[in-house]
Image (cartoon, rainbow, N blue to C red; front, side):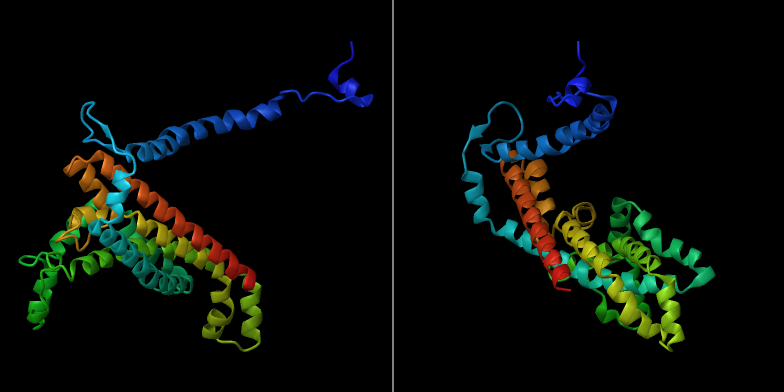
Length: 308
């Protein structure tokens, strides 16, 4: 009897055989695919299913309402206010975090031997738990016993003392400042990696031609970081649209929804108001909004890369 290899050599068509080389990728990928299906794909699909129900999450009294929750969401001013706060957080995250992160990265890149201690100090905020950080800054902003107002009183600027987390005009800004402070080190490391990949030969050649460090940075290093900027903007925007823990600890979305985000609004509907169906609608809408914005950013970044 001829083997498949022999039939193939004679000009026939041989059926593919399952060898160890073909089976290995399936074996290694199967656990990851299983975990993604159980913890990502199934909850995502199920949240869309639950968005069609009027259910408090307890018992078997779920009632099918079709698109009723989505119609309600379309006219829900609190949800759209929360979405607007997410957009503000995303915009200020990009405008505040990335420039400061670039400056710190350049400082550390030129610091030489002393940069190791500075890297540790600058990186500390990112190592702290968001919950612990929220409690810390909630006390820091306390209008009666907080260090911030006490500092203003000590330097004769008592008029600047405010109820930072209790004022509807200040709460979101106070929280955004903490969010930026916590996440700047991440982007600093990202830009440090980008600067480390800049060819030293090009910098040396520019020095020989009489270029200053400032000129080298603006004309050579900053354009080199273009890809890093695209990645950082995408991560900052997506992360801001999904933000939850720090703001929930500091303000819970208050006062009067002034610091409400889509994630905190979803949490309150599910776990405080026991509206699992409507909370799932908020979660599903949040997924669609984040996906749409991410897709637009990716498309714009590719177009920019092509044009440049």
